[in-house]
Length: 385
Image 1 (cartoon, helix red, strand yellow):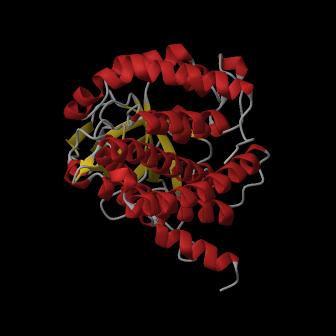
Image 2: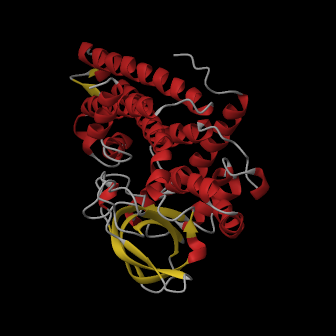
Image 3: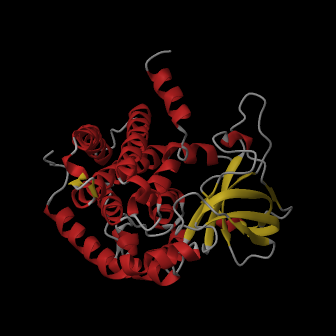
């Protein structure tokens, strides 16, 4: 379908990203997947391109953009090539909004220059072994010292994307006990320097997909965190986390749509070349019907994503509508990519084919930023049941 969501600036940006991916990412991506992470040099290259500064305020050397559309272009282009930029999405789409919105002037001056250049990589640590979607169940604690100069941080986190290579981690911890009336009270966000004594990276987790994106277990044993590293107000952490969920869910929807669209391209190219019983697979009616169904689903998702990007740009994308777009796009991508893999036959199960990577990489979108079940709960509440 014809799109009107992007302008000429986005088109120019897309060309730059596509060229960069072709030259600097595709030739090395298999090696990065084997290593379980991208090299730090890639992040510095992305910093040089200005990728990390698109939504950074101009006074800190960024582009000053408030739109998510440039990030959408990146997701579409990485999907098209069957690659990722490692943990960049956490750095730019998850962490940056917290630093910009809740960081004070001193914190921004201290961290944002390195953030922009890729010299200082970031991650955010919310999930614990016993607390995933239920953030109110967080047990990691941070006790303020008697003189008020620092917190002592203790606890553990898991499934932390970018945790192996991060230099600064935003850690959600309980700074006061939860109240009987509100379990969400008492959570704060502390910015932890990963060179701090008592901090350690545990296992680098082996995932089904997103294998070039490092994911880790983290532990904190009497980690001394200066009071100057408290982000925003003490006890206000839960509210901060929920305010950024709309963008996180939009990002999951965009990524899912982009992966599904790419899957159709990969499958279409494959069935035109592959022959069965002396006939190209593309000539069979089943192949045509399957790809036609997939195309219709992706077109619907594209229209929904484009509308959501426009609403987000004017800050009118609601929590419920973000849940709807995430639920629809992530579930759609699962169906479409599965069908496209089936058209590859046995080769679709081989990791050397990008369709197999898309299949594995996309599955997590139905889990993170709120599972499909959580999205259904939000939508049901919005319609009054």
